[in-house]
Length: 265
Image 1: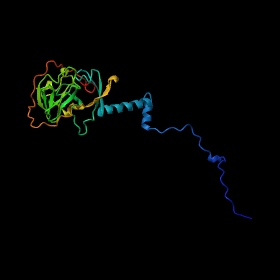
Image 2 (image 1 turned 90 degrees about the vertical axis):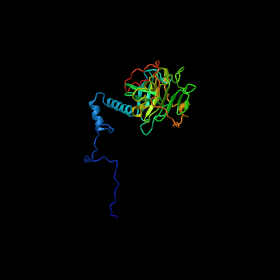
Image 3 (image 1 turned 135 degrees about the vertical axis):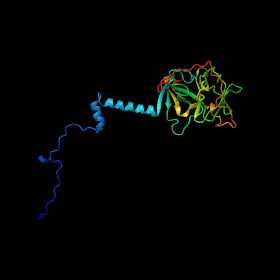
Image 4 (image 1 turned 30 degrees about the vertical axis):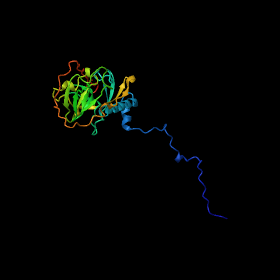
């Protein structure tokens, strides 16, 4: 007779003893959540919805401060491309990392100290070191000896300028003009002022990249090809930096604009 005991397999279907009764869950398992967000949601009216909205607003504020910012066009000085009431989206990082405005860019800048209080929006015609002259035999502006055909974006019927000027743009500054030359207060109107009508690079807020409102007029603002053939420098350029005639009496000054909201045209 085999006296060796055999190991019986444990009956897993048997009910546990009284000392091994499983705990009875009090309710459905909850997802883990941030203790801070949970406490904030309990404290604020609206709970999690309010917390979500506050986080979204904070995100939009950070984006508007450091990345993208909308501006409203209050005047017609950049027509035909930018109309009164248009909202443009300004890329504030466009020149942040060693980049500089290029001829043809549409920039928004703080005009305090050079143009007047408020923010302005204009097209870059000359950058540091450029020799900008108005005008050649055909009536076009000449940059570093190269005539520039601006007809693709000038307001219909406008001449490139009725004000003759001959300037060299100092390093670290920009020479800017509005596309509606007959209705734009720009670098031409400040040639005799401190700074000579030039915009310091430090005052540039960013580059206008998109029209976002109204939706029917929404489009990307690309750099035109008109300035592509302009050389970087003109050999032997020797124009005086302050030369220029009196401001055009037909050019109406732009209305003021609130910083961070409207861009004066």
